[in-house]
Image 1 (cartoon, rainbow, N blue to C red):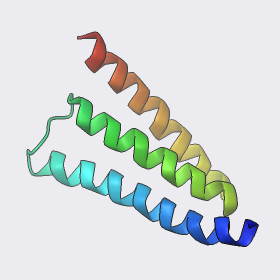
Image 2 (image 1 turned 90 degrees about the horizontal axis):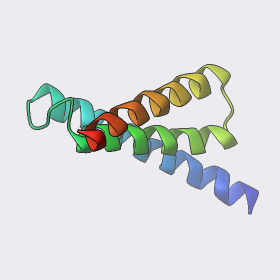
Image 3 (image 1 turned 90 degrees about the vertical axis):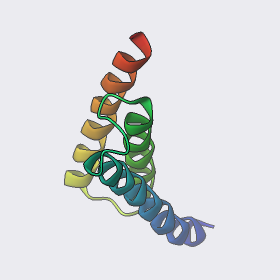
Length: 83
């Protein structure tokens, strides 16, 4: 079971990377704005998915950056929802 989750975690982590890259692509091509809920949710979800994969493939530096990414996304989500 642990081996199955470890293999699956790679795919989940790659999906998280895809979400973050998609957010950046959409922002860079002016398809979404940096103050849009979609932008922050893509980053938030992507960071959580990467963090999930890091549970099985530990790397402290990567965990720190993903936790920071999540916290920044939460601030962005809060500001969008509040407005």
